[in-house]
Length: 156
Image (cartoon, rainbow, N blue to C red):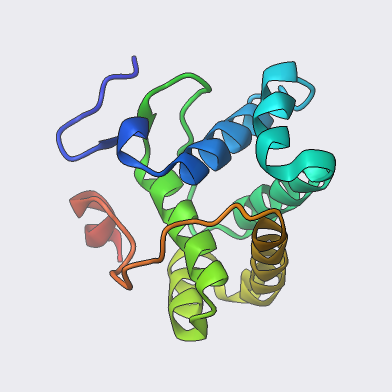
């Protein structure tokens, strides 16, 4: 089922650039890297660098997935609901694009185990530069702590 629960966000509530990234990583996670719709969507931003964006996003997802403090929740392609984890990943990438090193470090500490933070930092910053180069800008981060559920807070 793909209905938003109270407090959840939908794709209509995020920027177009965020929608493109959410769609792309959902397609990668679903094993649909070769989907023509995915390539067409990314080509609108990346042009001839579509393959680099997909490869870079794959590295980001793999690095964060391997170093994550807990399993990451991603919805299936076509679902209108954006998970908390997806919003936190968008905020992490936005922090990297913003150049606010303290905010990026804080978001990485929240997301990634200590032993994986340096590789994650390098990968996220490199991908953020690629997004800048193709002019896929994410909204500036608000500096707020990552979005978590009350259950997750109880685990901290």
